Length: 570
Ligand code: FES
Image (cartoon, rainbow, N blue to C red; front, side, top):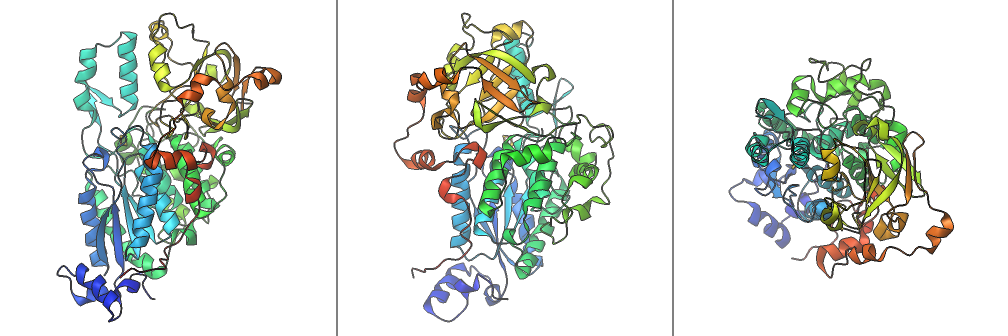
């Protein structure tokens, strides 16, 4: 076969001379003669602490690529550290995806190994790979090891929320809270709860884009290096077989991802990411597919935030394949993996070694773990709720709205002793959608007012057009579409309005007569608060971002451009 990279390297003309000469760096002629050029798209960065170890992983990938006869080429790409990047990492996901796609297309690359970990990095890499459509495999960077504080395991994210609520409720001192900080992050790797990073690594494997059995391997584990080496070697072979994402990913691959998402109790963020990836591939995936396919899938993984354990427990208990074996009958048997074999082929030898961490299908932690899609007068385009993370008594609830126009408004008034709110109220936060913030931050799981925490209230119905951290929990209705800034009815809610949530009936309604709603103008404070950036990426983003039900991708990035480059400037 003719390698794509030969467009740069073959021939005796001036252009080929230039391309080869600057890349020689001591490599022999044979490096440019029919050897696949394998990029290692590396999101390692000191400012993305969850991915800081990926350059070591890249070294193992390189060894594997060389061993199989390819040439490895490390390509640093935009990295997003969830805890650092402001105003929210999601604002930059599409930029990272676009930049990675363009750099893969622009360079003499035949295939790519994608190294990601922290929340947005694997989604961005997969969106890029889908659009450039070169052979691509993910090596997930893996979760960190479990840290302990005062004898108790600490779950990243989840325990930060829990401990900070305890401080606000007066049941934990601030000094103790701060003391727990240095125990939270024990080793390299991403968050060890079933947050977005863990979810997206496992979901990428269910899609078929990770060598089966690798996702969930802890970051410091020697087996991750071994897997990286083998993945490097595999990628060289993929080039010869021309196994590009568009050649084997199908709606069935996404079916498997949705089943996995439910069975592991994964993050709601996976919905926007999977919709965006499917959009790049031209696969017709909708939010309703998540409800239709996933709603009745049982929860089989006892991990925080829905359960007790953490990611290294899942790995020792049998790992992701042991979970998926339990739901084998729900999977598409024909959906292929990057190896060329169906995903289900890898389930035969999987075993559960600790039934407290991975439960069998016969005794699930919850019988229906998927994400429910709500519609109604408050969310005509849909909204999500994860019932497994909600309080059962709130799944059907009618309460009076307490409205916050922005996250700043929320913080300013939350603990105002005069705030008229009780445990039956419905907290509404708007201005947090893709356009409104912009970037759809993870703020939907609003903290509860301190005066209610002190009374022992630990959950309330909360409604927002933003997202929620995968490590969070509560009765939270999120991704309300259309968002307030896009003219959704969320903009018309006033404090004191009645709202009805009925998860079983899949409804979310604002109980205000239609003629009254028609009279209401969008709340001016909310409109004034919506972002209107003057220039740069934020301007481009606000002008082009799609709503959550379309994956919050940019409208001009949906679909694929392939890997062709038509012009050459030398
Ligand atoms: Fe990186 Fe949680 S902050 S995965």
